[in-house]
Length: 79
Image 1 (cartoon, rainbow, N blue to C red):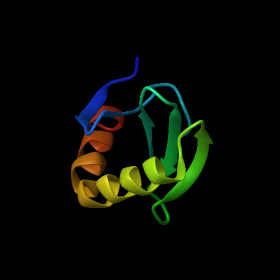
Image 2 (image 1 turned 90 degrees about the vertical axis):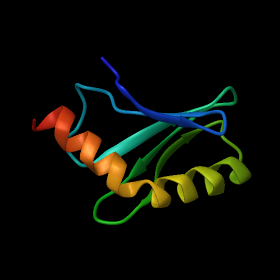
Image 3 (image 1 turned 120 degrees about the vertical axis):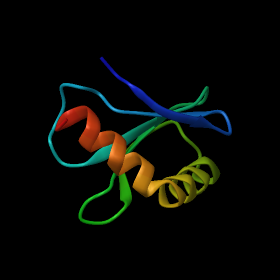
């Protein structure tokens, strides 16, 4: 199961239900996919074919919606 948190600008932000416990978010687009850690800091964990421009845009969206992502994480995994 991989619930979608939100979609924006051609990107899908989601979790994988059976993955590591460190808080993170996956992002996919037509071009590729990336994974960002949210703890201890927001930073790129993995990148599969996303451009540098896309990664900058995605990180900005994550920073803007960090509280929403965290709330969705705790609701899905804890709650």
